[in-house]
Length: 414
Ligand SMILES: *Cc1c(COP(=O)(O)O)cnc(C)c1O
Image 1 (cartoon, rainbow, N blue to C red):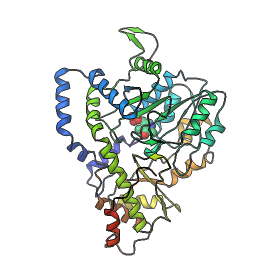
Image 2 (image 1 turned 120 degrees about the horizontal axis):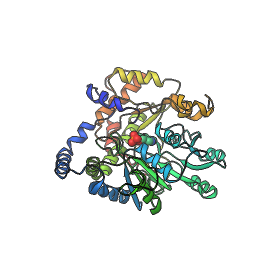
Image 3 (image 1 turned 45 degrees about the vertical axis):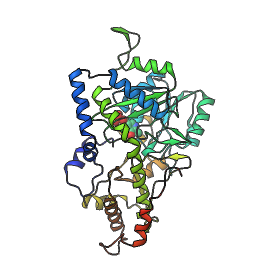
Image 4 (image 1 turned 90 degrees about the horizontal axis):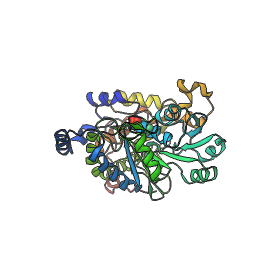
């Protein structure tokens, strides 16, 4: 995912035995449709916003069940535009998680406001609502919960805080398109919700792209203005906005992929179930913790992130690397300890759950096209790294194991 603009190329150019993700294979299934859309857009010479983007906005709004959707240039810009639309700036505080991609907090700083980091719940990796409550101050204007790795944050306590304190909630849904909380999708769980179409997200374009969803028509109108330099009428600027528009070619690609999103999400969920079966069959559940699906959630597994206990994470990572098995590290440094935020005054030990997550997590390949054989290789390598494999070759051939696998475990809603 993010932080890894480079590793996309790395992961795909090297011939790994199991890549971390595989966008080539996905592209093969849609290439003719993509190419004919690109051809059409070139013949029309319409490249920015326009009909194609408007269609995508309608489709995303329908997908999330929101009243409005506003395309923009990236997930990062979606966050910045959301903060601007709420008039959040200098002297304001915004509460968020330190265990997320950098942009969640940099957007807050970029508009001149102060990020206030609150520790996470160790099971879900998402904001701990109790700690959010404790961090509210008279300057708090918004909370940005992140639906990390594809599972929605605990929203109900945040809604109660938001109503009581009259503050806004901006969902960071960049990793969570299609994820559900109590039957409602990410995108309608806050005042505003931010999506990214970075290529490795579950719904990724052929470059950067983003979207904001909301039920508030006035905010939507403001956002449509802010993304085009605050312009209302040509060369009339009511306020200073940004240049943050979505390209027609991106919209066309994303529209084609949106039709496949639910199918791809289901494959991710099946892969997650299969990992669980495999790890269980190898008796590894005392050494690693698997992702938990919390009650009333649908997890869309943008990442399949495990914890390796006993300080053995780096050893496991190294073994996977040596075997050409792709793995990711999201996130190695919690944001409160980033150099650029040192003026905020946080130190090691301040947010212990985020810090220990950073030391223990690693993400395994989970892309929809991942095969059973590839997953077996991943689990086998981890078993070897942990010194558990009794002998290298015939693991996972027990007939009982295969029976269980054929019975496609359910994991949609826990
Ligand atoms: C990807 C991501 C972003 C930023 O999206 P871009 O489109 O890359 O700008 C923000 N927050 C989270 C949690 C993300 O995963």
